Length: 115
Image 1: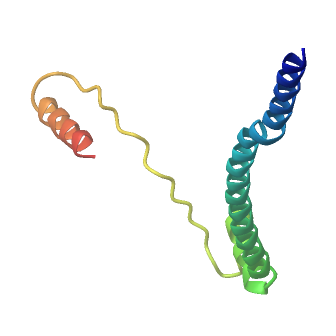
Image 2 (image 1 turned 180 degrees about the vertical axis):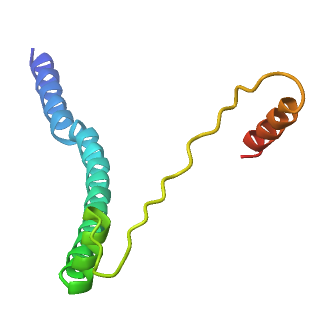
């Protein structure tokens, strides 16, 4: 009976030691990974924050305000003319068969493969 009680007590002590010392190791490793991810996020946020701070400082000047008004609202000063240049639309690539369209299709295919 004493042997059984001793083994039972040893089993309980081993289970408690396992729960206290071994099980938290997985959580500890997960926390290390989580801390590294959070650190990377923090560094990225700090970088973006410093860029925004620099932009705020730049826009706090008269030249910065003028530049922002030009970009955002199309501000034009007295004596200037505004000209808007739109990007070219995409060209059609479904050309008919036959000359000279087959040459153009081959050129388009060569350019898209080379890109």
